[in-house]
Image (cartoon, rainbow, N blue to C red; front, side, top):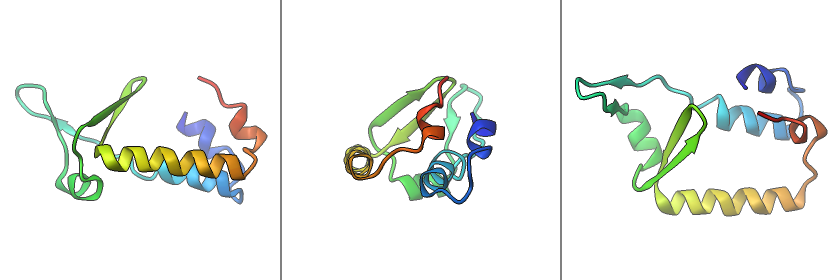
Length: 93
């Protein structure tokens, strides 16, 4: 998916947002001896992680519940105001 996103036109605002959101915040995390994921303190501080876990195929996201809902509302509003470029609309997994 990273390769597909990286190949999109870099001057398009939708592409920039997608890259920032999906690629810009990727962080490797280690597992402890009990195979629990150790989340770096910088990510805990940045995300205010609380209650939401979102499955993303082979990945998952942890979110503060209020921020999760605000993000979805914001993206829905943005998507209704602008036309999604064909390159992003054609992405499929």
